[in-house]
Image (tube, rainbow over all chains, first blue to last red; front, side, top):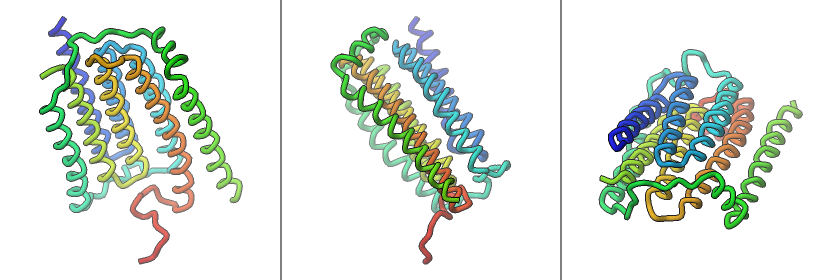
Length: 169
Length: 102
């Protein structure tokens, strides 16, 4: 079992890494979106490995089913060129800036993670959807209600913002 | 190296490559994709810290669910804002969106 878990971890890590590199480096935006979907599925697999099946299910449902479709709509509606908007070579200064932005948090936080490992439990326990629901309607009721308000405000705001602009025309 | 460290390193990889994409990309949608990468890394880190330490597992998993809800709301708003900006400036390139001369 231990070897199987390690194999699954390596597989998901490979999916996540190749997907992430594709998401930031692909020329066309649709290919970048495919890389992002690969990352989301790999992260869902890691949730399954950590004995959190409900979160994995929600990851597939919300991210792969919802957010990626939203981003795809944004790609369609903004009329990107078919050979890719990022096809012209990037300036050296911008690439250097991006490398600094990648390495500064990466190096600092990886040193912290590797130097100060906290106490861990080797085998995670699974809390079922029953306990999650009880927590959502019990101790964490306020954030649960707030997230519904935020979702409503975001949807209403999105409709209002897009509709007023098109109404003026 | 414990399992928690491995998961945190994967989450950190997602965070840093998201930063890289956020600076390196020139279109607005490419930046949104990089931000989603970073949010995925955050969720992975939260669930790993909740499941593999003696901390409260329900709190960690609910935190990740709330992060997902926030990401959905954020994606909706970003879609509307990007649509308006592209309609007004007639370009999805972030570098050309500027009204000031000079």
